[in-house]
Length: 168
Image (cartoon, rainbow, N blue to C red; front, side):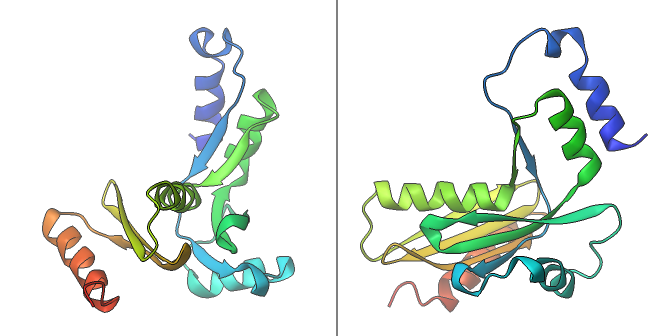
């Protein structure tokens, strides 16, 4: 069955639709590309994304999410039918990329911790390891790696740490 059909059936269960939700978010996990805000052109998002991820086509739609506090735009894909199914029941549903949510959370933590020099953040989501680094309250590095086991996770974390010359 299609994902949108499964989602619609789940959302139409009495235990789900008997409650009125104040806010709803739909968060997609897909490969992302980060573009500087000053280089962003809406008409180029599909071309840029498909250049980086030519395999990620089909029923996916390329979307973008602006993160003004980071002067960045996150390009990602999602299944349009799934978004439409969710928004049919909850019209004010916000749609996000998991990577955009991670970046924003890391940036907010970085600001709260008042790091003048830098901050290093790691997110592990089912073998999908996202590493973010900030310097002087600006995004310095972010990348997501496939890391199925602890050895892969440690390798990627230490490699990024070394490449950024974080101890210098």
